[in-house]
Length: 273
Image (cartoon, rainbow, N blue to C red; front, side, top):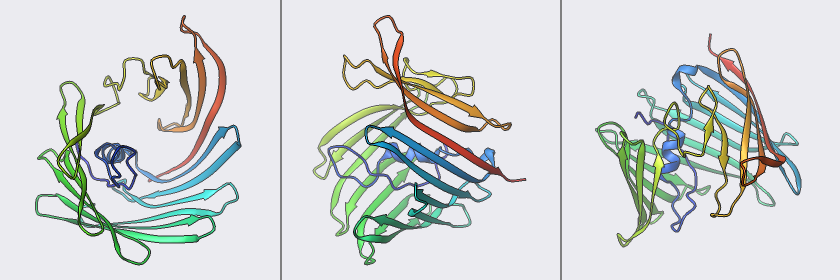
């Protein structure tokens, strides 16, 4: 499993990690290098009790299908997020510059630098708007480029906690263990390594012929009867260009009732020639 892309997504768990193995693996395989995207303009609308919230993203890619920039706008066409990515000759990320809009405060900037050793392990250093170190992450990979250990430190270099991962490809399962700074296990979970083809995340999930998820249950608790369906439209190259998610109440007989639109997403895709 080849993993290249690093991402900045907060882990929601008992520990305040700025990175997680699960989010890294998800983003590492998000874009297939064979799709040859040049640009994607993506419009997303979320439907809730407060109304409709819409965002538009502009994503640009290089020849290796690495993101070079990401711009996010609100429904009034105001820039609210900007990422600029830089890579070395091996297509490894070496810098990420971020600019984001925060209400009342205004625009805030920060950046991240990545450095690699001779065997491909990585140190990520996050800097705040005052160019002070805010967080440090260390990534350790096995010979197959699987992320097997991720350590998180605060800006002073004190360990916050770390994660380890064991990959079982025969059963399509990765076990992620989470530890605090005292080496105490605080959480453990199993996740699917791949969600494509015959490798499904859950037996209750359903997929279409393109391998995209079209049905899943919310599963907040044993009595949760809320589920979701997803509808797609595709272009001539097989990439989805329209995606709609609906919520339902599933009866004991399996019938779906009370259909409500929850999200719509459209994409305009430009391919390399």
